[in-house]
Amino acid sequence: MLGFAVLLAAMLVADDKSSNDQKEQLSKLQLLVGQWRGVGQPQRSSTKDNWIEQADWAWDFEKDAPSLVAKLPKGKYFSALRLSAAPGARDYRLAATPAAGSETLHYSGTLDDQNQLVLTADQPSDGYPVRLSFRFAAGGDRLLLLLEKPGTAAGQFARLAEVGYTRQGSGFGKNVTQRECVVTGGLGTIEVTHNGKTYYVCCTGCRDYFNENAEKVLAEHAARAKSK
Image (spheres, rainbow, N blue to C red):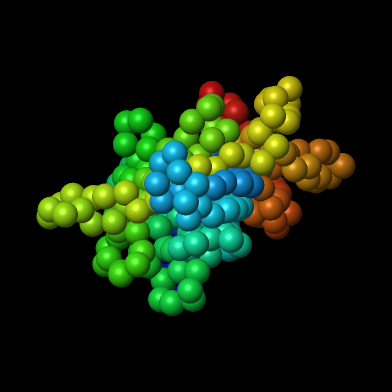
């Protein structure tokens, strides 16, 4: 019985370490978190067939592992996205829910040296992008999402469309960048309280996680601050 208890404790410690490692890896894409408004363009410098896009990215701690999730209420191709960390230090997986409500599509890829996330479909599907590239600009206030289809030659890609997002309220809060999300270390924009003290988190996902695990979150936050 004692041996089982020791084994269970070791498994719980290992799970916590794995979850923290994945959270740290996803934190490299913390700039995704927030509300975005954008325009999709099949052709550059043309308004033909343009469409409006919205994206609301937040942390999600309710699954077996942390992830970054996005709701796309006006998405042309997808209605929801779930980004998770893969085993490699800069590797990621994306589960994309088609706007048409068909079967979830899966992408995998890497964050390159320019902090551009490039993901390729595990199994291409007709009418949907085969490659997705996320790139930040303007200090994180702009997000460019390039959607590509197969090119004319094997291994090549061609532009399907590009969505240019602007962070909602991007000109607001520049004087409060010292407010750090106690869960992820990103920019804290939402107030939370514990034992009469006020802290900040970056999204509703972090808010819910904090409310359920306040002591654990604050201990991890203090450890991070001490190690800096």
